[in-house]
Amino acid sequence: MKFLKISILGIIIFSFFGCQCPKIKKKVVEEKEEKKVEEVSILKPEEKIEGKATPEEVKKAIKGEEIPIPEIPKDKKFIKPEEISPELAKIFENIYFDFDKYDIRPDASETLQKIGEYLLKNPQIKILIEGHCDERGTREYNLVLGEQRALSARRFLIVMGVSPKRIYTISYGEDMPAVPESNEDAWAKNRRCEFKIEVEK
Image (cartoon, rainbow, N blue to C red; front, side, top):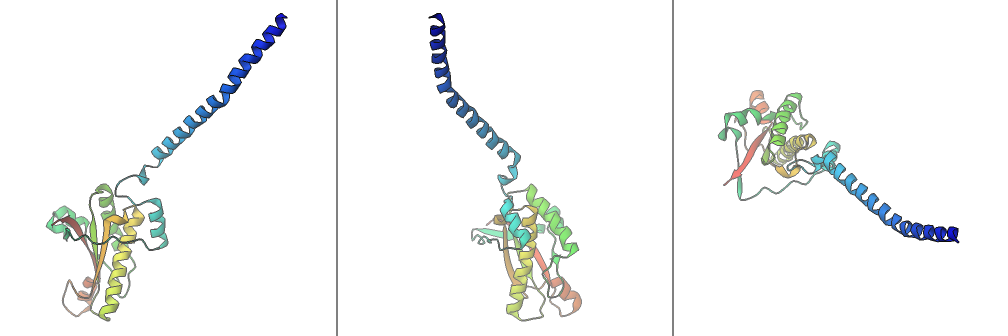
């Protein structure tokens, strides 16, 4: 009889805790999952940093895929870096291109590295990249070529991690030469991208 009472008591205790175990187990699993989510968030802060490109945008830029260009805001203006400070003028220098090309040259790559590093440290800054060409070729052709040059520079900065939402582009083709002459030296200086910085009007 005594054995029977102990057995019944054991069944009751087992039944009680047996019913509770799944609930306790579920709670522990949920807590672990929440912790995992927190750990993932901590491990990937770059996805949440303001002004940085997302991993998907960087992949697209590496592959050369099209990344939407934001519309140039009408309530802002873009000024030359030297109008702000000599320090910025040294960072945002013009980059130059070979004849009929929009590939980034090694010297341009060094300049873009400096620009990209500055933009990553200053996420509030937005820029306009202007694409320019020399006078050879039709006006229509040069407008397209100037656009490709600006897009090449933009793509380079996005691969570095700068958000595409911070980089506007425009092409002036042959319409705004830096040197209004017709010779090799002038043409070399006109095949360029210039960088302007966004400020309030």
